[in-house]
Amino acid sequence: MVTHKCNCLKAVKYLYLVILIFSFLKVSAQRDTLPKNQDDKNPGPVIDSSKQWDMIDVIKKIFNKQSPDSARNKSKKLVYSVVPAVGYSLSTGFAVDITANVAFYTNNNHKQNLSEMDVEAVYDTKIQKILISRATIWGTDNNYKFVTDLRLEKYPVGTYGLGTGTSQAKEDPLVYSYIRTYLTAYRKIIPDFYIGLGYNLDYHFNITEAGNADKTISDFQKYDETSSSTSSGTTINLLFDNSETR
Image (cartoon, rainbow, N blue to C red; front, top):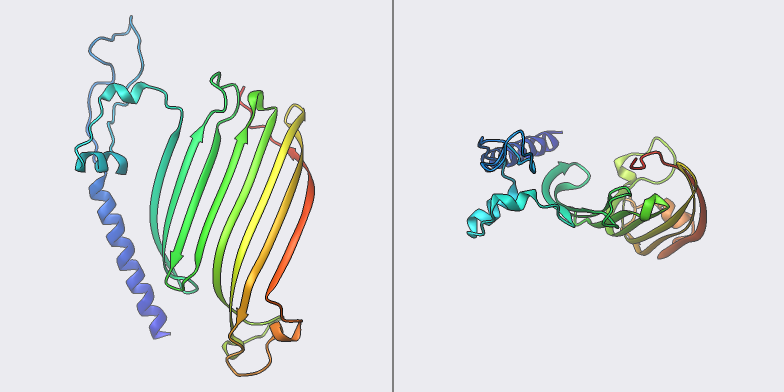
């Protein structure tokens, strides 16, 4: 119990340190909302009045890469962000997480929902490695919707067998690698309703165990120990989605 308490206090200290660093990095300054060549009778593109800085602005400042304010008025084909994070839990220890997201329209007329793709990478002190990629892509006029969920993991984890009332003496450290491939394509049939055909694959491989801490036979051994397992099949989906751009 004392060890857990000390670890939690360390985690809180690291968290406050990260918050403090990012607080200094976020700078804001005020300026006029309207450009000098713009008035109420001659409206133009609205410029952000807060002029807030993000991490990309800080990096550009460090490397002396400046861009004119007018560049912020131009609509970009891709809008992206990269967010680093740190965390702590008893099961993972300290974890470093990086999430990247990109949003875009699949047609220049913007008559469809905003499509997005994100990637997340996690690495922790328990040597768990996780890479996740998800995407939602809309076709023209929202007639089609494509959804993906892809994962690659190496996941050491402590298991305690089946049933309730297990104790730490029954802990069985398990290590496995995992691949997930979920793909679904939807077609609009009537407003807000879609029908979809998909394929799902869950593949666990390189499965190994250390055995129960008390040296007894583990449930993993009792129920036909295996080094890999595969779940695969097609799916038919019905979807209600009323987020369509009007």
